[in-house]
Length: 211
Image (cartoon, rainbow, N blue to C red):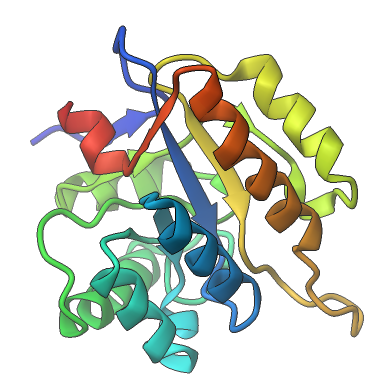
């Protein structure tokens, strides 16, 4: 075991396989809308969920698992892990793993750091836990975008075989402003119709890695 975990931004493949990933959920409205869309189209995605979100919306997480989506660890409280103590970071990760295992998640539980930020201390903890850190090579910045066409333009510009796209199905309420992921939902509606026309197939992160 090394002092650094394995970081994955994309997967090397000649096949037109890509992974849709979502951070910060689950959310009672937006995650459910996505699950309905994916069920209709027979698509599997990867959701990096927070432990606090799991506790609030356990039924949604059970639905994700039942419908064959992959669940990843996005920490317990979605706090920036930079400059946190090892014990705090380990607790954030392990608490969320315990919740996911308790709901029936099998196999590896990959990790994505809150805000995509990680330094040496968190890296060493993740290495000790034998975690793969899943990043992305297709940033969408959907969390601050109201126009689905802008989100789609960013995806089309960078998408290629083995790509990992990052979107958000929830988020943090700031200054009393409610979370709104309608632009993300509308972009995904177009994406899951258009990418298959270009020959792409959707896979979970683990399916992409193990392809």
